Length: 240
Image (cartoon, rainbow, N blue to C red; front, side, top):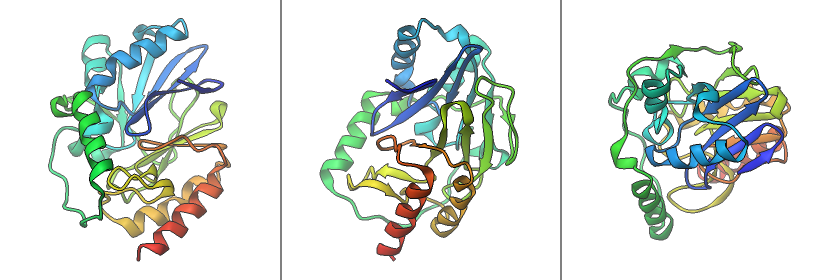
C-alpha cells in the first residue's frame, strides 16, 4: 500500500513492515512475518521494482514479528540487515526477558494469533549475520535513514527517521492498535521489557517533527509525531 511519496506499507494494522522506494533503490524497515514475502514482492512490482532493488533492511528490534523475511533477503539476495547491538541476540533467536501480564480481549487476541499463523509466524528464520547500528547513525541507504535510540520495549529498540518521507518508524516503541485488546490510537505497546523507559525514550523522536509515525502494529499515524507522543503519554497515565 502506498501511503505517501516514497512511503509504502506491507501487511496491515495487525503486523506491518515498511518500504522507502527512492530513485536509487529501496530500503526495508522491519520485515514483518515470513509470509509477508509475497506481499513484499507484490508491492515492489506495483512500483516497477524488484527484490534486486532492495539495498538494506533496518530492524527496529529483534522480535519474531519484525524479523520475518529479513534473513531470506540476506541469504538469497545478499541484502545487509541493520540492527542495534542490544537486540542482536534477540534477532538470532535468543531468549527474551519476562514482561508484565496484560489485560486482553479474546476477539483481538485470536485475530492476532490467526493472522500470525497465516503469515508464517510459526516458521521464523532467525538472523545469522548483521550490521550493527547505533543512535545518531545515518545510513548509506535509499532515503538516508537516521537511527534514533528508543530503548524500553527492548534494550536495542530504535526508531528510524527518513526525511524524504517525513516519517519516523517506531517499531514497538508505541502502537496504534493494541494486539491484545484491539484498542486504537497511540498508546504504549504490550510485551515491553521496561515500560517506563519506553515512554521516556519517545522524547527522542519529537525533534524530528515528522508528519508520519509508523508502528509495527496499528494504523499509520499522519497527525504529527508530537501529537502521537502526547497521546501515548496520556494513555500510559490511565493504565497506572
